[in-house]
Image (cartoon, rainbow, N blue to C red; front, side):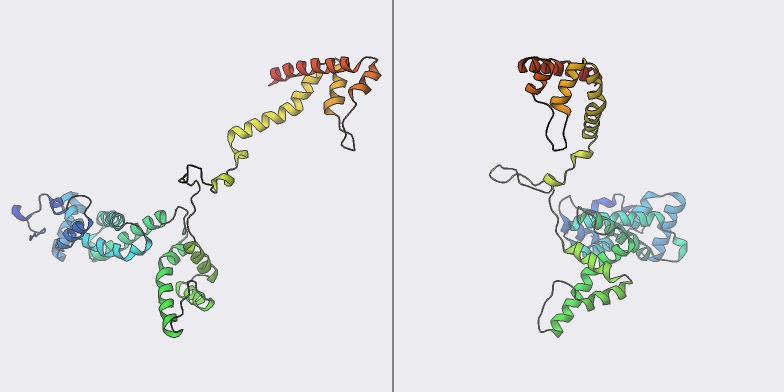
Length: 313
């Protein structure tokens, strides 16, 4: 099938350019179709770019995008080593291509393929950094540079080791390689070590799924949760503190002198030796009543204090 998407002839003008795109789910067919789309000449590219820029001609923009789909496919292959779906990489690269077409200025004297390359890579880089790990491994400019160069440079060092060490293989970088990489990428050796550690570490599922026998698996979420700083827990803790200080004081004020002293001796007094206050029998001897009577006064006082605390709360 031969199509000239730069021609103005109605029969060849790609009234429906997406007819070249195969049905969803077949990535190989999509790549094959994208590679069959012809590239534009310089004159055609300039023409369509000006039509889009001046007249906002979306059909012209579509022709610019379609003619560079093969570029996205080519660039996306360079990032297959990160374990992400090829189709997703192509999709993100296409987003970058469309952003490039939107910002492309045909009067700058640069071909769209050169201008779009930056936008395609930038969009794919952003996607990889967001999805390669749940925890971000690269946030600063220097870390991003390390992230996308560490793998290839480690592979280069391994090849050198294989040639000089008679097949000896290392999974980690030695100090000389770390320093060489730091000089080449203009970063600190400590940053190289940190990025290698981040990339070599695995992800840990915070809340693991139940095991086959139906029992819940133990995961970090079990001991990482800090409920003390949850809003509800903080409010409850504050209420307990208020009741333990101001609330108790208000409840004690509601008692008569004898009941208050009994409660304080029995529940609130602590001596230097960590022993409590007076016993029932000691209080009974002081007030000239039985120990049972002291216990009854104590029970009545506690009930009265509970009512006072409920009202205070």
